[in-house]
Image (cartoon, rainbow, N blue to C red; front, top):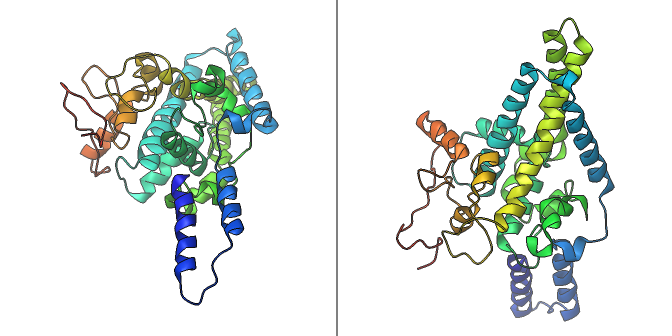
Amino acid sequence: MNTALSQVEETSAQISATPGVKPAPLEAVKLVTQKIKQDLRMGREHQEGRINWITTVFMGLFHLGALAALLPMFWSWKNLAAFGITYFFAINVGIGMAYHRLLTHRGYRVPRWLEYFVTACGTMALEGGPIFWVATHRVHHQNSDQEGDPHTPHDGTWWAHAGWILSGRALHSETALLGRYAPDLTRDRVHVWLSKYHWVPLTISGLIQVGLGAWLSPAHPIVGAAGMLLWGTFLRVTIGLHATWLVNSATHLWGGRRFETTDDSRNNWWVALLTGGEGWHNNHHAHPVSARHGLTWYEFDINYYGIWVMEKLGLARKVQIAKFDPDNPKPAGVA
């Protein structure tokens, strides 16, 4: 936000100092500045009381589907396998490795075709398209646990966990506005398409599960199709959402702090287990560009292990790793 405001002020000053150019009216500059402030405001103070009904209804339906998946008639090892495989590609590959460490922080680089593939995996998590996710997370880092943070526990634990998603203005389709925080993605046609049609990969995945479930259960094709869809999509999405949301809530409330950051970020081992390493949140906030979040041998970080494998295969390059003194750990940029 501060960058956008300073650009407005700097531009105004340049116009005013240009010979032969009429200075911009002060009121006009104030209006532009105010508009930018309003457009980019996030956090409970600016969203409370407005329910996003489309998001709320869809979240409710997915939670009902998750409960239905737990009925004994839908249990099978095949459905559990569908859950595990789709969870890995959506949460570990899609959210942790792609949306977060690759797109948001550019902690490593991959060929463009691979970037698009892992990004498509991220859309299957039902957490929005890449532009929305990346822009929101960059705002979070800029205002972490301060006014304007989209999901700080300072606004309430439930707000930080899920309330911020269910309330307020839907920004998924506002590419121009979000582009202020994700200009690198808005310039890319594929990322713009994936952001606009982020529901397509999840829908295709669900249709494949219906067909596969019916084919693998010839005696009871309807139960087989429904069971695999409920486990591979509804239950998997619901658990994945809460796992990601726990990074926003739990890792700013409970856990240890290796680094003295300016926010309340914590290292939380059980969130790290659920998310493949995203729970080492204090490490991440101290060194946000680092592709590795688990900075010691005992800090489990499967998302980094995946990046490491890609690097060994020649698919990932410029992999950033945090460097710090274990005896005197300090955040990046702190002398």
